[in-house]
Length: 216
Length: 199
Image (cartoon, rainbow over all chains, first blue to last red; front, side, top):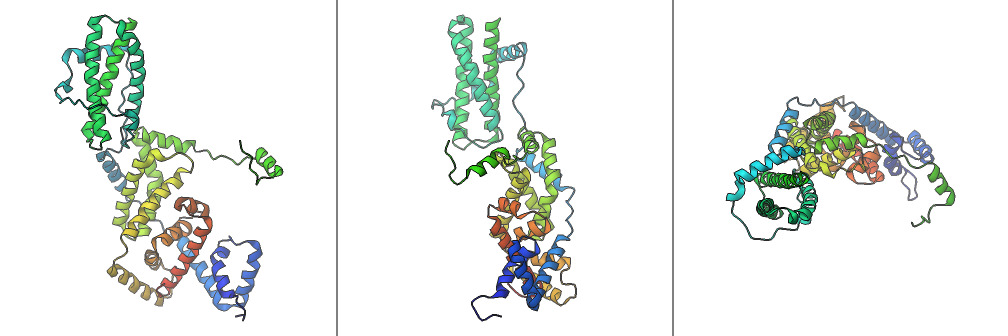
């Protein structure tokens, strides 16, 4: 070993992996090779590290357990991580009108739910990471569009059509506000989300009924 | 638009005529989009494509098949929860590896090897040091299990899985130099362990 501050063995050792992997700048390769040619311990170390690297590369891959994929799928389903597309396809006016008429005639199931006079939360604040959050945003977008169309036409509609529509919309809005508030408060259960999706759908169908009736 | 002062006009000219190729991530984004829409086939494709690699990594990080199965399951559930965060800036494989490696490393940082396991492994290593075939598979796997989790991950990704330092750096959010340095330290510790020396 040289008597100055440099320690060629330590310097070479620090470069050995880079040298073995071909990552060493060409200017340094000659210095490493020259040292290895004159230093048996460093040459042995280089041989050992090279053998180790080759042995690691030959390690056989473990077999993927055949049942594991099914287990993962089942768990994902049980935790409702699959974002099944719950948005129903936009129906033709006849279908939408029929569905909405059934709703109006039979009355909404959720009328029995306790009303809550608290103001609806700001929808832009609902940034909840939930499998149905995407569907919620799309419903909100669709409803905003439909409401804009309906708001201009509803005052012109005859009272016998306008009043039941307004009454149903008010109830649906209340149900939506209740559930959005629960979600925003972090207290939602899976049922909260399911119900919210269904109420959104009811409102879409109701607005679609009004627009299709107006077109007729 | 602001000019980039560091670029000379000739470099700018070269960049203008030879722009850096933008990798095509459309296939990755399409698969992710199908998963987000809830297509089970798409999730099956993800499992088929990346399941064995993640299981192998978990198997070697943990040294235990049952733990590896649990970790693989946890990683895929985590991927499903995070899948909407994939934006195509990195390859899907890199993004998935990043999620997987971080999850697996965090498991082992939380739960270091027990004394009993460590002593058993060291006993095996001492036997191995006397055996003529120093780098037999079982010895290697036991030694890998004794590495610190960060070194273990870099060693497995580079020397076993064959990833490049650039990929490892992206996955672990470290520099290429740090990846190279950690690989060298990991190999040196492996050598010491296989010779029966506690690093």
